[in-house]
Image (cartoon, rainbow, N blue to C red; front, side, top):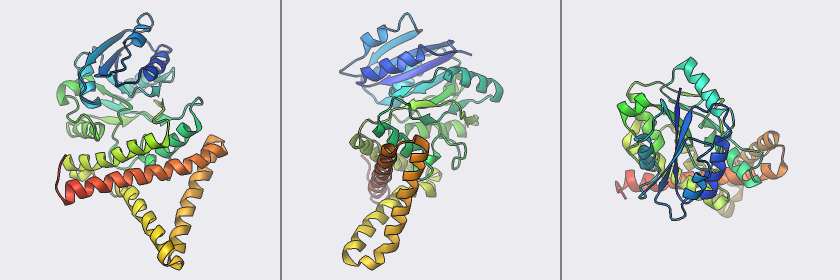
Length: 323
């Protein structure tokens, strides 16, 4: 089984260096790497060239179109039986491709996704963000989880599709705003088999600051409405939870000002949620600092996603306006 690893890149030369280093250490070496520079001003051509003797690697530079269409550019030039997509801010365990190859030979998936985790080298903020995106106490619990809600939709930081999927379904028709979910829905509808490979994890850095994390999650909230515009049935009750939390939190703040006795129950619920997050993160990460930061990360995740969701819900559905 031969893999083509597709990596869209935009102004992140340091990240691609670290990612390529981890790929050079793979125990399974039947793969090529295609790095697609998406109109970057700070390109990584020289860094990619360092790995020419360690990897079967190609570097392409194209005009900026966004990550979805950039992946399509790589798909069209790939030679593999499977096309594997990574975000440039991932680190790949040494046994990743070996794990995927063995699983695909046994289970015959047409497309797959895998979970993400925090690497030991990550900063406390990055570990807290990783916790927020994978915790059962936030909406992150449905990402890369074997007990996910509804159909499993691989996420583009760690996903793969067979050549047959590419030749039958094509590639991404959205370049951002939920493009990976939209793509996996079309793969499902075409009758292909999609599954989670639980052991095929990557270490996903995500964002290095809470401000960057807020912007990313606000974007994710907007993306969910974009998916709804294409596939109304894919909007589930769980997707409203961050918006409900956000509205509830604002309502609680107002109650605390105008009539505190009515706010006690709401205050208690919010405190309970944060305590659960704190102790669960402490148990997993063995760090009080990461546990405390996990409360901040979870709050940002819920409110940023919720505000983005509410913004585009009002704009694109209630007011029926498009960008």
